[in-house]
Length: 403
Image 1 (cartoon, one colour):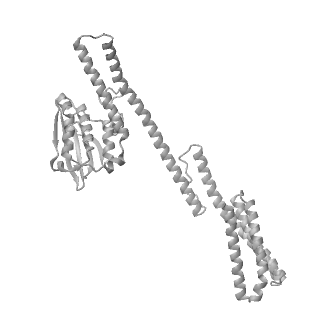
Image 2 (spheres, rainbow, N blue to C red; image 1 turned 90 degrees about the horizontal axis):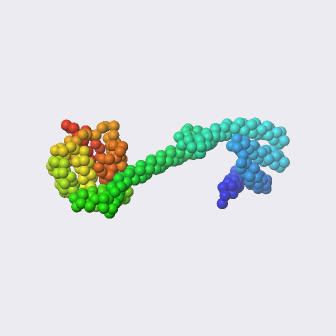
Image 3 (tube, rainbow, N blue to C red; image 1 turned 90 degrees about the vertical axis):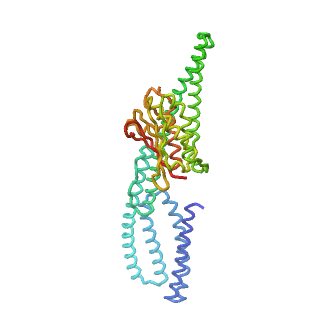
């Protein structure tokens, strides 16, 4: 059923109900006989009112609010005058009284018209204010808002809905722009990081194939370099795959657990060779917290932080993994190194995917280790931050809830 048909049905029901109520009041106050004389005029009035309402609804469908409000006020007065004329014709009202009532109805028409215009002005201004905001949004100004419009509860609610929609749309487009920028950065970074090892592989393989190098020592050196390049590619692909596939929802529902001490030991074992190659000392200070349960994924986080610390700590330096309880249901795990430290201006950027401290991207690593660590920690309900360590170097601190 259309809204116009529904409105006409509502008008008919209200008009019919009003006629029945009027007859009931007439029967109680004037008697059954007098009320019976009103039955036919009221029936004619009901039919005429419904018909006039249907006609007016079609005519006023595209009219402004002001015209609609004035038309309603005028229509009510016309109905009153028509009913008064019927009553005068049936001799229920004298001609003198009918004239006086007509004057009063005319005055009521003017008063109702003025009130209708005032109400329409308020509503019209509210609608125009919302329309202006919507036009600005359509033109690309997503910061445009309707604000406080007045004009009644319905129009105020509509304005709030419009502003809320604009805010969500603006936030959505901003997120989309950020994702697009990250996508471009990711493609650029991956392309660069793939180009170097692939170029090395191509040069060395062509040199061996073309016989440019033929002595066993050089071939062994080239073979070792080819292995390093393949390892770098494999590491990049593994990190990239894990970064893309990492699902925070899946991590939250994991039920596997691991002792914190075992997670730290596994990470230290994975990084031991690299640390010994630089003459670094790996130390731990876990205390009673070593017995707490944690997610097995924390091993990867600690390993990435250790690899970052080893990379940026000079030879004969020290890397310390420590842990302590911060609250009854939370603990902190930190990785401190004695390296060159991190500039406070870039402390927030080091967790961005593929970000590196040098624009040439010549430092070792894939640029995904810290980004992976941050994503895993946040998925586990924790936080990760970096700050200068006492005595120089950097301190990465993770705070997590106990499991």
